Image 1 (tube, one colour):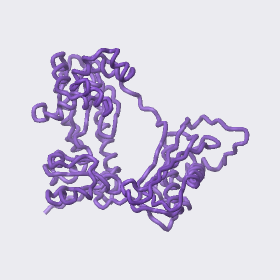
Image 2: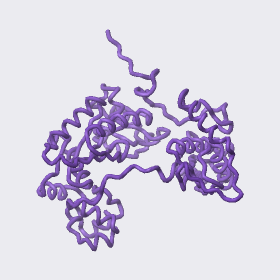
Image 3: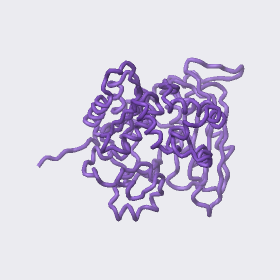
Image 4: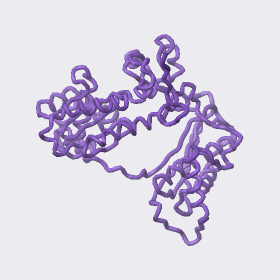
Length: 420
């Protein structure tokens, strides 16, 4: 049996853990630079606030209904996620962390166990230890576990956040209830095709012939169909090193000066190099992109990217900055107000494997230098050691006007309790 564990309204729930006065009240969390809504509590959903809503357009509604608005606090959310996943790993033989707020568990050898009872035990332990509410769906396959989780969450009062699909009757009933657009792995384009053929529910989907599904959705769609039929085709995935690493940001303001954007791109390159070293890999290509403000149709629009191949595999910040700035010079266009830029390092290879060309030369001092910088920044705090290209006299940061404290990772921001 598989289980899908999903943290309910995760970002909003993280904020409520340290603000219990917000329980039962509408909460939303905004994206980078406080741009749009990326997380909502159930109360916010009931007010009609859509996912992706531009914050400035809904400010009046926020004020009228006293919606608690927070900037994204990824440090807090990441730490809370780690705490939840650690508990889940202790309570299941195998785990696949699917996202920051979801995980698949596999329970081989639990045939004689009461999984609904055990699910409630998991739910209680996670909530007692972290304050994060979760929903759990059990089923014979991963796709059906997704369906079971939707039922557990949708009918939380009846299921008490745990639902088990363990009979053929339950499987069929669940598939007849689930809309085809809500099936895991069926996107918008497939939904449009299916609706033309009056395929409305997940049960309609699995009633299609194998040949038709394979023709329309390839072998991936066929595996999904078999999984929904109760035939196990999707196994837990082993976490692999990332094949590409990206650091991208929208700017707080629009910039037209090359030096301003160069500083940002250099900082993104440094962040990518840190991530490469953390997972012990090198990159063999560096992509740089710049975007104008797509929401300002009254301004010139420009979108451009370029991929620069490195002379040799590297994870040194100096090298990646050099390639990133070279790419930026190539695609930069004067007179454009830029709103976003990013650096993506790709063609990753293991740290211990390097293939040089005949004339490539690597500075042997860079590797120990990077290790020293990483040690200092780990011990004393992020960005204690900076590169000159980052412009030490200037501080760049996202607009996060409603950022909550990092309660669990910064001692000087730990929650305070006042006793009268």
